[in-house]
Every structure is written in C-alpha cells, then in structure tokens.
Length: 404
Length: 159
Image (cartoon, rainbow over all chains, first blue to last red; front, side, top):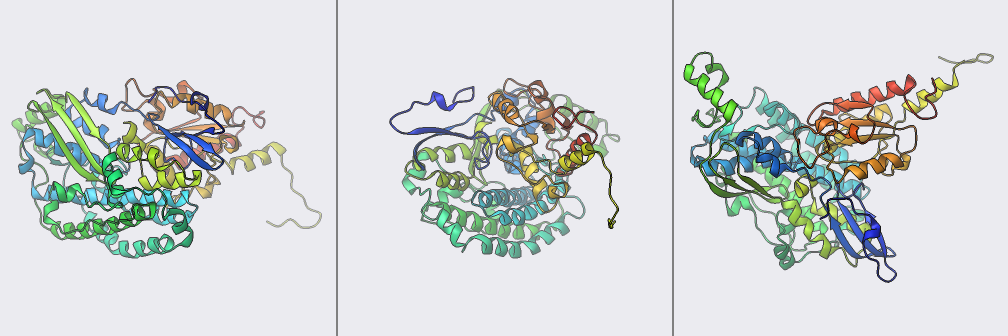
C-alpha cells in the first residue's frame, strides 16, 4: 500500500495487456477502492487491489482519547453498522474491566436488538447498491425505504441517524424512549411484506441470475485460507458464525439458524444475506417480547458509568463521580483482550492493550471487509470486467473499516 | 397562465439560462465515507432529490456540475479529489458535506485533510456528522439560489 495515489503508468506492462485503473472514484467500487487491472480485451488477466484512500488514522486517534471517547471513533469505521462496532468495542473494554457479568439483562437484550437492526440496515444498503451495479434500480428504493425505518429507530434511541453512540461501556446511554417499542412493532409488521417484494424483484429474475450464478466462485478451502468470514464464508458452505461459536451479550437466549449455501458464488452470497435478514428479524421478534420487562440499562458502578444526571443536583457523591468520569474518564487494569462479534460483514473484532491508564495503549481492529476483499485478487483473473463489479458487490466491502 | 395569439413573454436571456441551469445541477458520483450513505439516502423515495432536478448522479466528472465531497478526505485521496475537480467543466460548484470534509471533524491527525477548502474552492458547507439528508437538500437549494443570483465563475455568471 503506497501513501500516494497510483497512476496506471506505474504498473508494469507485459505483452499486449492494457493496464486500466478502476477507481478510486468509480460508481461500483463501493467507496474508494482502486483496482489496477491488466486486461486483454474485456477479460481480466490480473487484478491488483490498492487500498488506503480512506485511511483516517482512527486506531492512532484512539490512543489519545479516553476509553469512552474512543467509541465515537469506532462507530465511524464500519459506517454501515455503527452499533456493531460500538458493541464490539464496549464488550472488549468490559472484558478488560472484568464487568462482563454485571451488565444488566435489559441492556444485553437491547444490545442484541441494536446489532440485529444494524445488520438489516447494512444488508439493505448492500442489496440496494448491488442492484444498482447490475442495473436494477428499483431495488434501491425498496431497500432504502426499509432502512429509513431502522434509522428512525436509531434516531429515537441515540439521537443521531447514523452514529447514535447509544451503546456505552457499562451499558446503554439511557433507556429506550417512549414510543420506541410501537415503532419497532410497526417495523416488525412491515418487514415480511417488504422481504417478499425484495425477493420478488431479484431472486427469480433471469437477468440477475445470469449475472450472479457461477460468478466469483470461492471454494470452502480458499475461503478459509483467505480468512474470509461472514456471509461470504457461509455462502461457501461453512456455517461459522461468532454468535453461535462464541456467544456474547444474550445471544445464547435466542433461537436462530445460520443460513448457509454450498455453491460459493455471488448468487449464493446473495441468498445467504437475504436469509440472514429474515433470521435477524426472528431474533428481533424474540427480543421484542422481553422489552416489556423494565429494568436497569447500565451497570451500577459510578466509577465506570456516570450516575444519572438528575441525581447530580441532589447528591455530593454523584456530582464528584460525574465530574471525575467527564474530566478524566475511568482507568482500565493493565492487560490485553481480543473480543469478536458477528458484524454484518463477518467477524468484527477488537484487540485492545491497556497499560492501566485512562486511555488505551493500543487498539487494533480486525475488519471483516479487509480480509474478505483479499480474495478478489484470486477471484478476478479470467473473468470479464463486468463480472468484477458483481464480485466486489457480493463481497460487500466498506472502506471505512478496510482503511481505518 | 396561457399565452394566446398575439401575446408574448419578455425575459432576459441570462435569467432564463440561470433558471434552466439551476434546475439541473447534476452531482458527481463520488462517495468517500459515512456521508456518502446519507448522500445516497437523498436520492431515495423518502427525500427524493429529483424534486430539485439533481437526481442524475454522473459518474464522469466531465458531465457533472456539482461535486459533493461526502466524507473525510485522506491525504492519499486529496490529489484524486483535486484532479476530479479540475476535470469538471465550468461552471462548477462544490458542497463540502459534513464536519470531516469541512474541517477534518473529529479526525485531527496525520491522515486526514483538515478541510477540503485547502485544496478546492467550496461554495456551501453542510454541518453534521453526518448531516441529515434534509441538510444536504438545503445545501443544494443554496447552490440553486447562488446560480439564480449570478453565482461565481463560469460563462453565465457575468453580473
């Protein structure tokens, strides 16, 4: 990865092959991916992905921020699934603090709810843009309409549409607001019909099938060798899901299946993601039943989680704790931790090292998109440029987390 | 209003041209980061930028009038953004969408350009992280207003 943009002249030329730079501004690279293509006519001889066009220095930034502030940056890595990132970071810090078992049950359930809502919203963006790449524009409008309902819920709970910062270390930033559950019920009622429409538009569409079946095929061995996770791995027949393999939050209390396909092509990944959206809704329906039970949503430990604002005017201790949390944060015992969760794109993980300060010593992210994107190099040669677009779309990379 | 036989309308050519130009501001398809998702939301049924005549996102800078810099611009991306801006035909406008594009936002570090106005001229800044689609629609409105009032640069902005 170079620090300056590549120009096609830099890549060596051999024989009759022409070198074409696809990206970083290209409508179907889903962000700022650049692929140096060596082509003969329409077919790809060699594809060399070049990343780093969105390198933001987030990991370095986090070293200079309080533990609680780092989460704001974490949300901006995978910007299609902010709550998953926030949850993973919070779980990792909680593990270091040794308070994993003390998070109230209601907070655990709401965290599950948020990560499943995010998964549906993220898959909506994937499906909409994948459709546009293949020339099916109407899918985009159906998907973004569904996503809009989920963003409304995020806005209600966290205050912002895309980066709500609602999941916090130690719990959640306040309980769900009034009217949230009713909106959620409306979404649950709307969802099956919308999924039927989405499937109706694409699943049996002969053009869509022609473009995706047997395109970007990845064997199970290759997928494992490249470190591919998430829907891309499950499309190749391996039923690995962090939610089942290493359950976190309260996932072990809910029933759901892991959809898998064995074909390993772009169409299989498409079907896996659609099935996943329905499984997510199955989890959401189960969480919804538990939301009627009131309870605390944050850990009762003023050294880690600031006491409620209304107590500050009444209690001297609450005021001091609040001041300490705001002005210098909390300290985390020395040690290191690896925490993985199942993000919409695969195994999303944080490896965090603490040296006992109120800031992390090092934060390392395992972004699923980066590992999934690797296999593009092996997949592309021998195929048409038009199929390359399908491959990128079916891997669903998000460059915020690839480049960080 | 119906124009009957023998009746006619008078207008300045500049005004007619500006009206037409302001009603067909075509943005460049250039998504950078989080804001790009909200930029996509703007074209969805809920917000529908087609009402302003700006739904035609062009993938080639040579066909675009408006550059929406949607997200943080990394040092590596900055030369690319500059080059795309140079490739756009005059008259052209730029919206700096979100805190990162406008000032670097929360990323005050080695990797992010601290405001794209250090590399290209900006007409409208939209605050927010990311701004709501309504915010972006308002920014497009402001661009239209600028064009109708004469705007800057380009062949039509003589006054």
